[in-house]
Picture 1 (cartoon, rainbow, N blue to C red):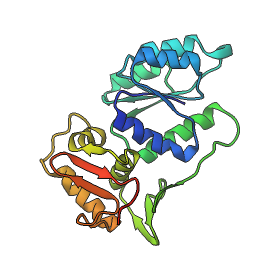
Picture 2: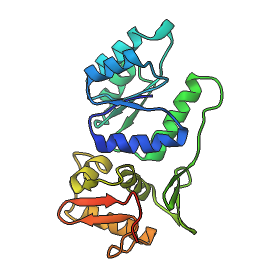
Picture 3: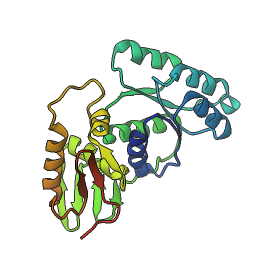
Picture 4: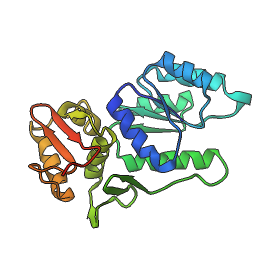
Length: 228
């Protein structure tokens, strides 16, 4: 698969989500780099940000498909208006998804598009393991050790975002932008409140964190190796 996105935080989120399907993923952050990658490595699926010169990318891919074969494509956009959606379909996209999105919805759409485009069984594993955590994306359950948790769709998206960027600090602004969208206006403590709720579900004591560490004044870091 080829992924065209210009925000590394979101790239990592998509990458972790698609690990459920055992897909090989390569990413580009500009239209020229995406076009060069498509020429070098024709994918089975293209996922692209429609706001990054999406029409140019689609025209190039459709014009250079090997043997005239159709390569399915899913467009992502921060604008959910009808005009934007219709434009993406006019370019040749098979589906479109508005940012922000739930990871399980992205995965479901990817599987559906691949099933329509190719014969045979699409490989899919509902559970991914992240150290002590086992995350079931479809049932929205998380097992921490021997304890099974039930997360809301938003809590799972937040957990995915932090886990996908394990080891580095994810700022409050990045969390807001990825999970709420750039136009969302919220109270100043909304991120902290949701992190607090997720910690309760994970039985994560902020004073002795196993999963999520607070970086004062900046954001949060998911522990790649859980500290005791």
